Length: 156
Image (cartoon, rainbow, N blue to C red; front, side):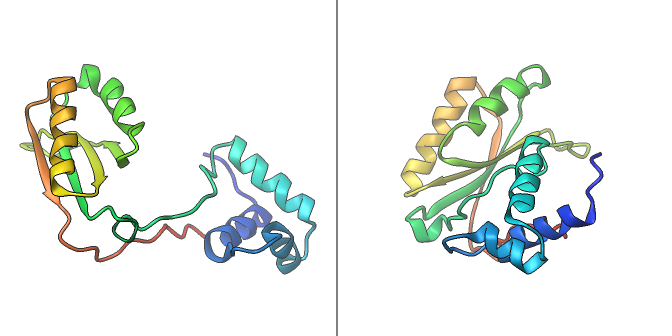
């Protein structure tokens, strides 16, 4: 585990809570924290290199972007190919989340994939394509009924 100092925590807190669309967001963060812009940029760069920050980007709401058909799918994937299958599915533009999870006894579906598409027909087509490509015939589809919460985690 990486030890995160107070300055880094402060910068990460600003990034996750107050990262605004403005000409110089890192300069504003530096001013707010009473440090230099170079310190902010250096810390952010180090956090990216160490894998603490995965990326800085835009969060798009799928439904508002025309992706009205969404489903969590659970797949029964043999352990010997789960990394290969999961890695390939994670690269699909229609997939936002892909997890290999430990499952309780009696639940054999170990790969969880969130798929987004414009129509129910397109969603079914994507699921069928995955099933055929990897010869995965045992899976469950949980269509999204409504979004109750969708936020990024606040770690600090």
